[in-house]
Image 1 (cartoon, one colour):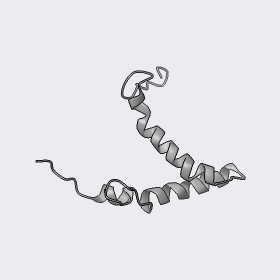
Image 2 (cartoon, rainbow, N blue to C red):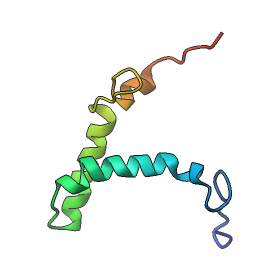
Image 3 (cartoon, rainbow, N blue to C red):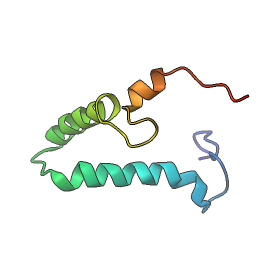
Amino acid sequence: MKTFGVERSLSMKGCSYDNTVAEATFKIIKTEFIHQMKFDSLEQLRLEFSDYVNWFNKLHIHGTPGKVSPLEYKKRPLKKAV
């Protein structure tokens, strides 16, 4: 990290809060994508994964919040808390 001038993200090594979102995302990818496919080449993996990410972000309906795709959720205006 020192060599490339990279700083630690949220907290110190071993803090579980740093990896929670990443680990949840990787679990979804493994469950919905990796364990359902067989890849004959690295190029096939790249193409299939690119399609999966596109589908996941633009078409896949998520249970929360609001039962919409991540892209649709991001387009929604922010609600002000009063």
